[in-house]
Length: 477
Image (cartoon, rainbow, N blue to C red; front, top):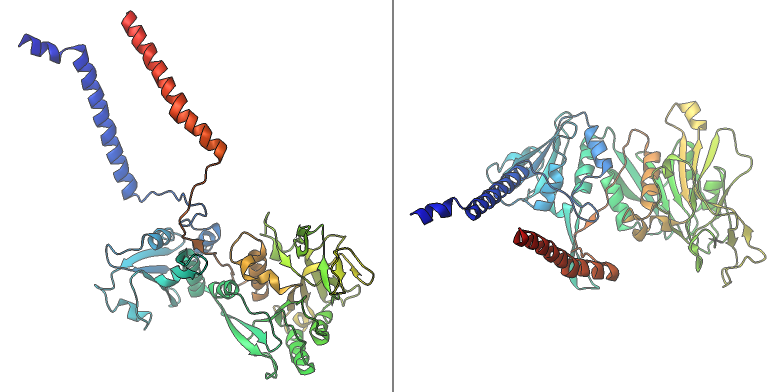
């Protein structure tokens, strides 16, 4: 009995009891901390491109909305899509936005108040209770599935933020914007990312066959002429010119590959102080790579259209060069958006294979993008009626590879151009999609060797050394 009592009062028992108590307390704290974190829904987005974190543009837009907004998340309890839910939850509490979950099984008639379309699980209905406008965002639009023919596997992209922010813009927009893009001159096809950008910016777009038309439609807010290969007719020139002189807004893209005489098309620009140089620009010093001097990386000039390009580059493959006329009328302002270096020239002989300047080539520097404002109409017909034109030396600036992501500044330039032409009252932005492909962490060879030696050799040896010192001191005492 004495031995048993002695065991309970021994130094070893006390130390063991103390260690056990510490372990119990630590385990309890970990459990409580996990419960608190789960309850408060505290998460950290560790994905490389911040898949589940709202961009500052979305936060700024959402926080500035004064109308009462309800975002109804249509899903059964337990069937939520985690990726959609993570993005959607971040809108809750921004400005006057409230996210509410609605079970379509329990409330089968709820969606009929806003749409006649069938609602599927994980769809979102964005409702502006102030003006009564609403928009349905489908789960298939937020998580897009495609097939990669190079790997023969399905690929998935997350577009929840892009679609939800676009819906917020749609239900809060004061006015609709309509864009017409011309056809009939073998214009460059609008890329998927460009049409997606227009859709997310809540800009309706429609084809305009100019050969059969007699005028630009009255509801046209922006006319886009996307790198035509063949010239406009005299009649087409006449009514497009009338549209512009009446305070029209237009985006022009030039086609450096065409060999057609573009007299009328270029005259539409020369009427507004823009001269188009023959041939295509070669700029060895202002190119992405000296081996490809037609892949231009122009210097951006100070303007609202180029304001948020930042440190990213704007890539413009195979471009026409433009210059501003010396004497323009007093109501006309022509501003350069992007420029080549002083050593650039325009190659006139298309059969030439050298990148060196030859006789007959046109000296630079050139503008690759220009913004034009003519206030003549504004003075006669009132504010807001000024003619606004944005022109780029190449339709390739809006190609799929360059505006699909924010890797290049092209996306910002195109978006800001649309916003500039739409008018200050239209908030134009579009959020790029995020790739849901599995991410792999790559460790450099040197780092791998360092951490292997540290964890497998040095750290164990250090622990053994510390243990030996403690043992030796206790044994000596």
